[in-house]
Length: 231
Image 1 (tube, rainbow, N blue to C red):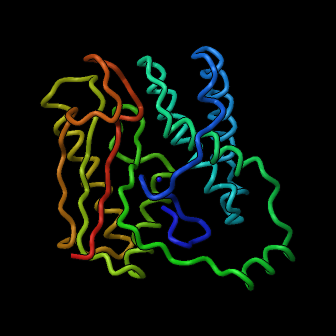
Image 2 (image 1 turned 90 degrees about the vertical axis):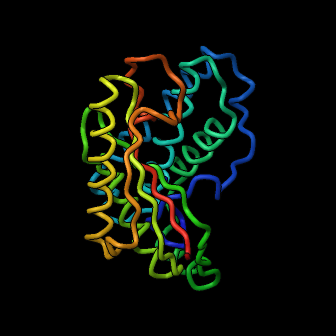
Image 3 (image 1 turned 60 degrees about the horizontal axis):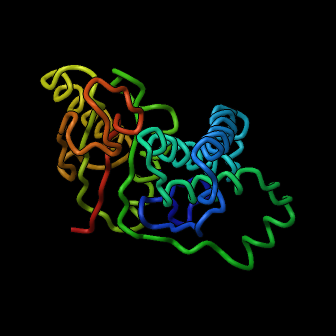
């Protein structure tokens, strides 16, 4: 999920740290309810075409809240309280719920404190619905932001690696993960990234983001990870 000083960007994994959330003090049942509430609000906002079309920053926070709350819920399903994703879920949900700045206030902020370009090398996860090889809609937006930031930050090499969950056979998942990676690479290419600058691969159901048993349809494991570097 990138934020490189761009109004509609996502936040690269590991580049933005949230303060420890009070949610970490809750029991698992209450925590699950709180996370699900934030996730549901974020999903609704992500699907708000008007919010996205207006380039409202709350749409960015909605995408990030959806991703981080989903990751936190996935960890919780396996019995783990993941402090990082819980704290980010809470923080992004709070930003989403905050009232937007008025046009006048936005103009003052833009004039007095222009956003600095953050060229921290990204590690962006693009997610997929079950058994699909095209990304969910907000994934396409994240891909576009990677390409936009690449030109400004001088990134010249990109890794595009596909993964699956553990449902389905190994051979099928190897192929599905590669198709996912190739489709993301094609979207990057359409956005201006040269094909020869990308290393594309599919690793099937290996390197799970959330450890599960076999034949589990875990949404956070159905992904393509994009990395970038200057050389």
